[in-house]
Amino acid sequence: MESTKQEKKIAEVLAEFVVNQKFENLPKAAVEKAKTYILDLAGCIVGASREQQAHALLDVIKTEGGNPHSSVFAHAFKTSDRNVEEINRLEKLIILPKSLTYSDSY
Image (tube, rainbow, N blue to C red; front, top):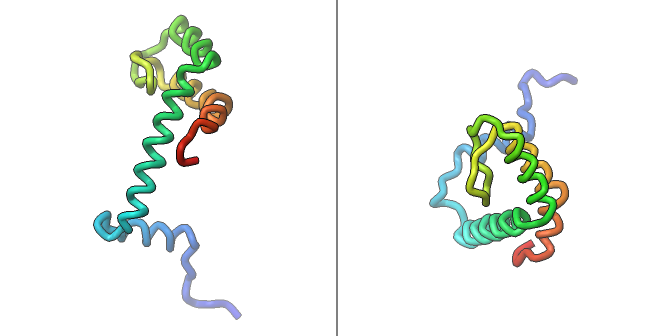
């Protein structure tokens, strides 16, 4: 038997729930935990940016140049969007997992 009422997909239900939430209504413990995770992750990213693999890629990218449209997180220079994507990819795949072993909240 077919339903005449179109059912919402779970992603739509979840999206509506998120859109209709107010920050003030979030549990304080959840907000504090999220802040801790975000700060911890930022610290891990900074730590990862000091690894040998990151420096090797940064040397190549600085030599290559590129239109300085995007800032490189934890480094004081800008490069092309594509180069920043490459740095992010390397840090996510190789360097960041290693740095997460030093995480306080992971």
